Length: 157
Image 1 (cartoon, rainbow, N blue to C red):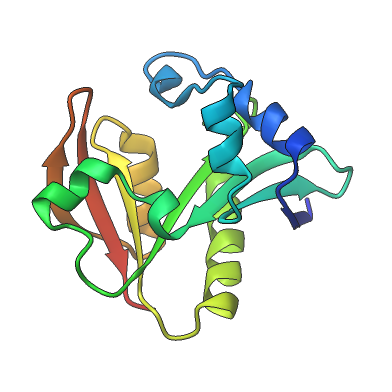
Image 2: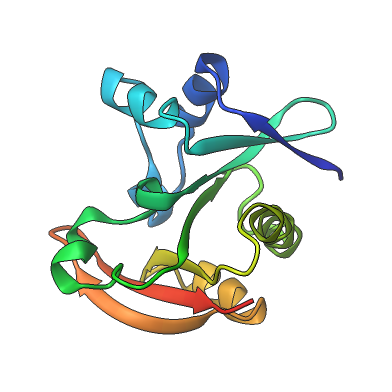
């Protein structure tokens, strides 16, 4: 499968915001509303499609990829490129994660040369944490929100 990164537009954002995950991953469900659309169209989100043009996933960078409460814990103080991502629920847990992540990391390395990477992940998401560790990320910081516990993971190229 060939993946392609596209600039986010209203149609792509609307499709992504309607995705519904099974529990416990329903934590990642969104809604199509003004706030969600504004965030997805602010310029830091990219859609990832397959060669048929179907939305496979998305990525975001910078503050959009951070959990705001993490700032209270000082977890975002170092100079990293923060990465956020999501995969269409039809593809999660089916062995696509490694290729999806390596595709994203290649894009990040090409666009943020030499800058170490960081991502934030809910601690219950063992599948994602296992994948990130396989790819070379290591656990760094822990913090809590009202709804979940999180860790940051870093990869120094």
